[in-house]
Length: 130
Ligand SMILES: [Zn+2]
Image (cartoon, rainbow, N blue to C red):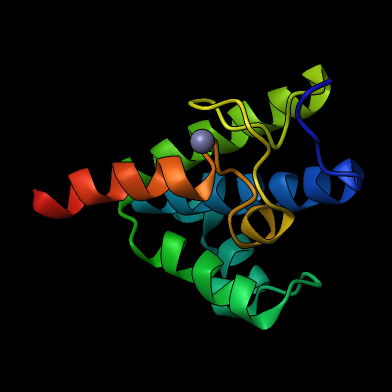
């Protein structure tokens, strides 16, 4: 063990599962599945997200999601699935690029984050140029 995984994995697992449901619902909605609309309305939008996260964390979290159209949401969904898989494997919270642990604060802001803040910043710089 050279990298520390988060201690409250169950909590992250629950968050990720909720996010997964939410995004899966949104994707169906965007794809024109009107049957899903009532469930979506009942659960409210992401700003009403009610996990016990720090306020700052939820701001980042919302920002991640409000960026999205269906394709982006599909990407996030893949990342969420990936993160859930990592929880099972015991590698959750470890950066895919540098293999160091991702900070708890970052995981609360973005529980599906596959990269630590440093590696993610590198990725975002690339994206902003496009
Ligand atoms: Zn990293």
